[in-house]
Length: 130
Image (tube, rainbow, N blue to C red; front, side):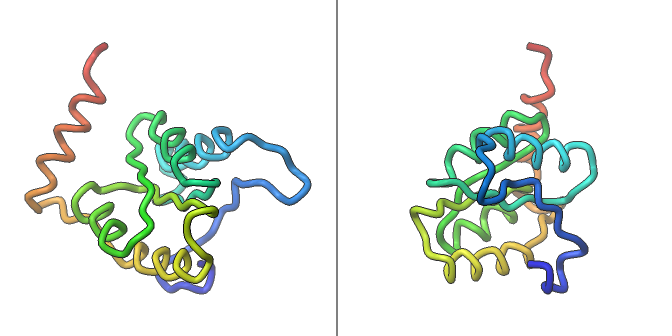
């Protein structure tokens, strides 16, 4: 991703081979960077992609989802304005994951689209006093 012209910088909040950091810690740290305005997007990977998506979604203002096909990656951004894409390392291979990540970087949410109202409803619910 570092060589992609759509990427200004890459921040690794993950683990190295010798680390035993739990995936929720990594996902929440990455999502918090987005919520704090320190990053625009995050690409997260765990065994299925589901655990990191669930974890990232616990951070207010974050929309994360697992997508293992091109159409879902596209709609993740264009229909849902999701900032976090997650992959399952046990689900897809590295070549497909690389291709999907590159595609994901080219999509930008249109605030005037029909989907914007739906995303606003999600945000409104999230911001309700509970």
